[in-house]
Length: 548
Image (cartoon, rainbow, N blue to C red; front, top):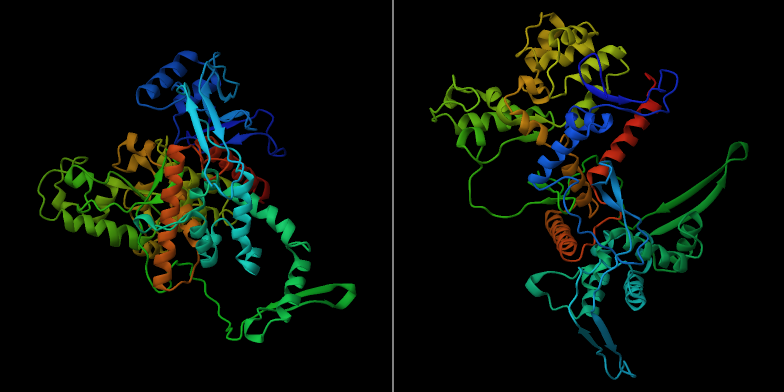
C-alpha cells in the first residue's frame, strides 16, 4: 500500500505504468480500515490478529464460527464469505463433505393410486444432528405446474420475467387455484409458497427460459416477432397489437428491419419522468438489510417524531444523500434550525454554541454526508475540461483523512480554470480563498454544506460514525430500480397496488432467507461481491477514459 500526493492510500502493481493499464490499481481505500488492510498486505500477523479479535468481540469478522451448510449435490465449491485460514490468510472457505453421525431416517409411503388418494406419509425416526441445507432443485411436478401457469399468460409470456409475472392477473389467479389460497392475512400468494427455491429469481428465470425454448421455436428475436405478427393478423383489428414485421432493402445492399406495434387508441408521447406514480412526489424511508443483503422499504409505525442525535440525544446520527440543494439546506438544514430554535443547551460537538444559535449550515455539519458516487459522478463530468492533477485534486477532497496541505490542494483547483474554480464555490465558507468575479456568482448560488459533507476534517461528524457509514446511496437506488421494474408512469391506485406487491415480495424473500437460506440471487450482495464489481467498474472507466 502506498500514499499519493494527498496522503490517500492506494494499491498498485509494480508492473503498472502509464503505458500499461492491465495491471492492478485500486484507490479510494481511505474509507476502509487501512491499518488492517496494510497489515494484510505486509503479513503483519500481530496487527491482523488484533483487528480480527476486535471484530469478533463485536459480532462480525472472519474469526466467527461458520454455520454454513449446503446440499451434497450443490455445485458450489467455496463459501461466499471470507474465512481466516490456518496460515492467517483471508480466503473464501472451501466446502467439504461433512462426515457426521446423524441417525435420522426418513420413510416415505406413497399410495399406489395418487388420484384416489392425494396424500403421502413421511415418517422421520431419530432427531437431526445438523441443520438442513437449503434446497437446490425444484421437483419436476412443481416445475410442470409452474410452466402450466406461465402458459396461461398466452402471448405475454414473451416478455415474462420473475418480476412481471406477478403483474399478470391470470397467472396469479392460477397460482391461487393451485395452492388453494384463501388469502390469509389478506396477502396474495407468491412462487415461494409453491416451493422455497422459487424465491431465487435467477432460478425462476432459468425455468422461464426452458419454456421459451419450447414455446417459441422461431426464437425470441426478429423471426419470433414475425411469427407473432402472423398470429395477430388473424385476430380482430381491436385485438391486434403487432401490426407489421417487415424487412426492406435500402441503399448499398443494406436492409431495414421494421416492427410496428400499435393498439387502436395509440398516441405518441415522450416522457422523461421515471416516477412510480405519475404526478405524485414519492417519499420512502429505506434501509440496507445486512443480514439479507437487500434494500427494503421500512414501514413500521413507531409513533415517534423525527429525532436528531445532536439535538435530542437520540435518533438520526447521520444522513447520506446527494448534493441536491433543496434537500440539504432548504430541507434538513432549515428543519433542524426550526426544531432547535427554543433549545438553549450547548451543541454536543461545539460546546461554545447553543443549539438555538445554530443556522441551517451549522446543523448540516453535525450529521449530513454526501453520497461519494454522486459526488464523483459530478466531478467526472469535468475530467475532459481540466488537467489530470486538477481532476485528481478534486477527487481527493472526498475523504476522511486530513490533507497534508489543504490550501495547496484548493489552490490547484482554483488555478485549474473556470469550471474547476466553480466547484470551489461551496467550500469558501470554510476555507479562506481569494475571490474573483467568476466565483462571486457561484458563491451566491453555491452550496456551503458540500465541503464538510465530503471532507471529514471540515465536518463535525465523529470519525467513527463517518467510517461506519455506507459510502454511497446505491442500496436505495437499487431499491428504486427494483420497484420501477413493476411499472412506471402508473396511476396512483396502480402504483399503490404494485408497490404493495413489491413490498410483500421483499418481505417474503427475507422470511425464506431466514428460515431456509435461499437468497434472491445466486450471487449475494456481500462485501466481496460489491468490492469485485466496484473494481471491475473502475477498470472499465480507466480503460475507456481518454485522459488515462
